Length: 287
Image 1 (cartoon, helix red, strand yellow):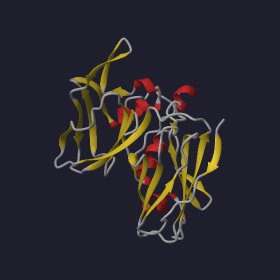
Image 2 (cartoon, helix red, strand yellow):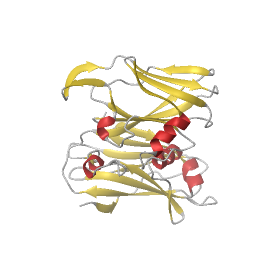
Image 3 (cartoon, helix red, strand yellow):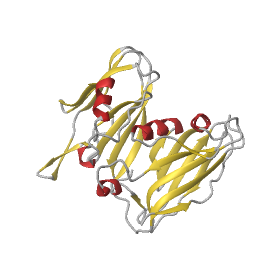
Image 4 (cartoon, helix red, strand yellow):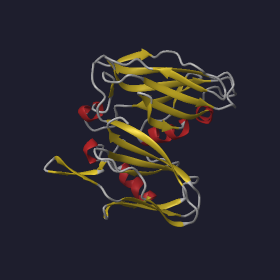
């Protein structure tokens, strides 16, 4: 049974500072953590203020970052999966999902919950902009009181794609780690028209080759995916099956061969020479 609980208080909640909270570990498995932000700026903790003031959020296990994102980009990616910004009274709520409620089955939803039986520390850090006045920050969680080790989880890594000219801009430097698989790559361009189309190849086999419009039409058919104008989304497990993530190592008859992908290439065809951030959502054991 899932329980809804209040997490310990944040420390260091102030303009221009990094707030942090240490989250209980051990016999607790986490499905979701909700951050609740408020301030005394005009509009209080509305979506605009929440996204402007919470400039970076980091989720750490044993002192290592497992997820990194801004509030604005978290809102956009959550909205893609059908979970948009929530107004919590005058405050704003940011949901960090560990298990994924948009999956097709209960088992595939729950399998990615974060067990903490073998975790020493679990922490969230939040950078607060200097423009915030009277900021406040709290958190709640959906948990199960089950002693479960931290197995395969969804990790979010943030990269900057440097673009100096229009046309083809190739990234072949994304991590290729045995045992990991890419759920999605969410790109955050300056303008929605900046990226014309994207081609993803793995060892010379095309795995994705679509314009944004064609990709968004495809996602819409899967029901729980809601394309966002702020994102160019490259989704490999768009069937909402965890098993359809793009693996970085090979298997034969369901067993790992030990052979790692040699060439993982993302070709962005750029309509404008604007650099942008991208997020990789990757399944694997914690870093």
